[in-house]
Length: 224
Image (cartoon, rainbow, N blue to C red):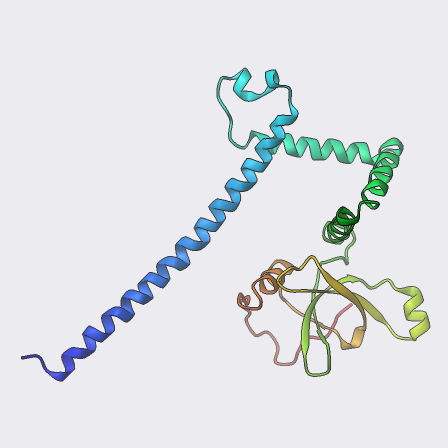
């Protein structure tokens, strides 16, 4: 006859199976999502080959398709576009093209927001989007993640008589939208968190929190 203690292993098996199943999901779900996104990007990049005449495409020249060849072509197209846009004629054409897009109601908002975000993200300045900051917002005692975008605010600092930094406070789960705040430098806390980790935290609604080892007991204030 089974004793009362035999019920524990029976009850523990479903829990162990559930734990193993979740552990397996935690391995395969990120892998599956990564493979899906990479394949999607490769397919999108390979569509750049459609810019080539049919006789110049790899399947016509070599008799078979080369996966990922579109990435090389896409990089070349981006590089040539940048070189073209850097000269006088290219800048005028880009300005004209943007003026046309800004006259289209729906496209205007999407393009302007995307361009502004790209300019901030890929800016070559030393300040833009290089630091993750913490500010008390929207009220004292509540904190919000934000990114430093600039600290060269001569007129604002002159008129307010305070040293201020410009920060971008993103919305969640879409970090491409948000708003800017001009915050006094002594009220800003600089975090050790990387920009990529902060974006993951914002996109995941705060579920994905980056690991951090305590360095100092006191919070780090903004450092110049």
